[in-house]
Image 1: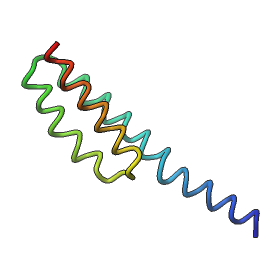
Image 2 (image 1 turned 60 degrees about the vertical axis):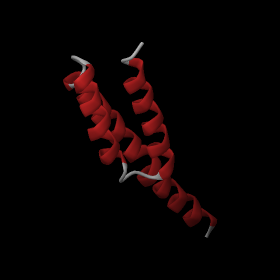
Image 3 (image 1 turned 180 degrees about the vertical axis):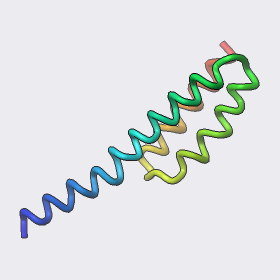
Image 4 (image 1 turned 45 degrees about the vertical axis):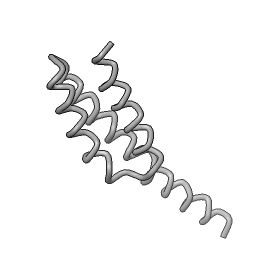
Length: 77
């Protein structure tokens, strides 16, 4: 039973943290390379990536939004 609990915890960890994190990294790199030209494209990046990150769990969504907001407001400085 302990062995089963460890395996299930490992599977849940992979499904809820690692896969969404890889997905976020891929999405983030795609949109950074597409929308890096000017300020309006950064607004598009900000609008489009947050809905794509909403299907992940709370932890990755929280860090996703922090990174996106940082990228968005760094365009002002």
